[in-house]
Length: 334
Image (cartoon, rainbow, N blue to C red; front, side, top):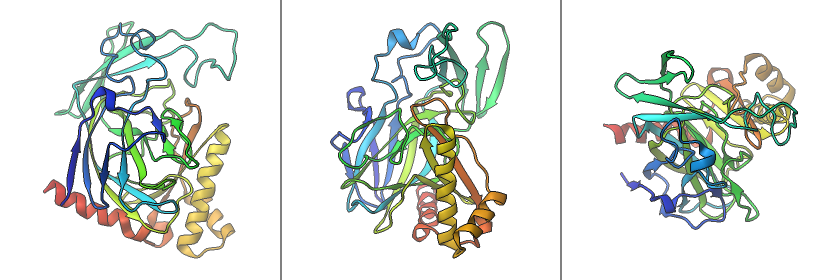
C-alpha cells in the first residue's frame, strides 16, 4: 500500500485552483494523509479576532495541494475517496460578515439597511463525545451539536489555463460547501489539465444545508483520502457516490440554474446507467430524487441532486471505483 503524508507550512497553502505548481506527485491507488487549515488560515482563534482585522483578502479559504496524479489527462476522471475527516483542534470558529451571507445585503444585492455586524463564535470540539458546543454571544445559552465533518472545498485545476479563487465553485469543483462531502464518500472530478492537480481544504466540523450565514463550524482537519483514476471517462460536473446514493452537483447564479445543472446531470447520468430514454429518466428522478442545498452565499451557489442506487438497478459507475476504494480504505484502517 502506497501512503503519502503531507502537512503544508503556511507558505505552502494555495488560494487558487490552477496557476500553481504541484506540491507532489501521486500514483492512482495512493492513500494521501493531509492536514488542511480552516478558511481563516488559523488566524481567527478568539471571539475578538475579527477576520477583517487578522486576515488579509484574498488570502482566505486556503487549500492543501495541488497534487499531480500520474497518468491523468484531459478527458479522464479523478476519483477521491474520503476515508476519514477529523477535526485537528479542540476548537473551531464561525462568523457573520458585513455584505456576506444569505440573509443580508451583498455587493450584488444592494440594500439600504446597515450591513450585518461582524461577529465571531468559538465552538468547543469534543472528539470523544462527537460534538461541537455552540455558545451564544449575548446570553449564557449553549448546546451540543453532533459533529458531521466534511470538506467545503475540493477540486481540480480548471480548463484553458484558468486560475480560479478557491472561494468560487464551478465545474472544476471548488467551494461547493455541501454537507454530503463527508467521510465514506467518493467525489468524481473531470480532469482538465495534465495531472488533474487536485486540492482539498475548508474543513467544517458541522454545517447546515445552505451555509446560510456564510460560514460553517470552520475547523482545521486531518484528512485521509484515497486516489484513483478512471481513464477515458469524462465528468462534466463534480459527482459524488456513497454506499447508497449517486449525486450530481451544479454551481451557478441564480440558484435556479445551479439546481437545473445538478438535476440535468443526474437525469442524463441516470439515463446512461439504466438505458432509459431521457424523459423516462426525468420522470424517475422527479419522483425519487432529493435536492440537498450546498451553499447559497458564495460567488456561485451550489445544489446537489441525489438518487438512491436502488432506483438505478444497482448499475456500477466509474468502473466500480467507489467499491474498489472502499476496499482500499478498509485495508488502510485495519
